[in-house]
Image 1: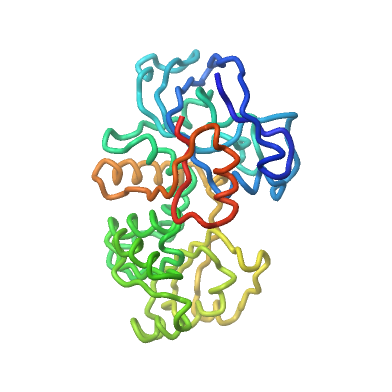
Image 2: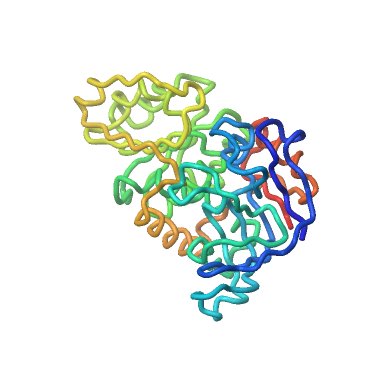
Length: 332
């Protein structure tokens, strides 16, 4: 079978190789999936570059997310699963989610533990299925960790991005009013199409001023944040008493300063979100909700570009450049 292997930490061109290898056989508790699509996430790019630690083997298969059809099962897995359409998550991670594992989805076939292969609703394409494990599950946790959002006002920063776009759809399906932020008119249209009630361009006017004009001081119940460092200082001004934040990145500053007392005085709760080490209960809740929304047509991940397996380097470089608005997919 054809597979993409990672041979060292470094650039995509220096370390990613398309190779031919034997098709694996599933062991106990495993399934063999004939892959149709593999997701390319920023975390995959960072892992390859060396930002998240050294290599764990001489070579590993790459990527965590994907979708395909179960072709064979190992001992302990019911044969009724053969032929099922599935989406995969956390494949390229160690059991605790904190390190890299040797498996991956960027291949014609993938071996995964059976519980990491989730039935893909008929309403969703394989390409959409490859956008769920990291982006949609991150979005779900960032939206829902503090409880129901029905009737609440949410601020979702980066509303046109892969996570932000899914977060808007999840929040709207759960009954929230959504205010999204973007950096351009083109991205504003994407956020509106996802269902955002209001869209604010943070580059035109200071975001805090726009929010206070729109909903008043302390008018936000919950923030889903793509850059906690950029917004930490305005949380006390924009969030209600006992408001909450689900933050999944901090690109502008990896060690943001915490204005402790202004946050404490308003009892603002902040939950960092790292999808790979989410609790089993959080994963189960996300899986159930996401599949229900996919089935109902209420969640449609945005795909910016589809690459061939042979274009793996171009795919990684595109994600690394940050020029895509939405998900990158390898079609297999």
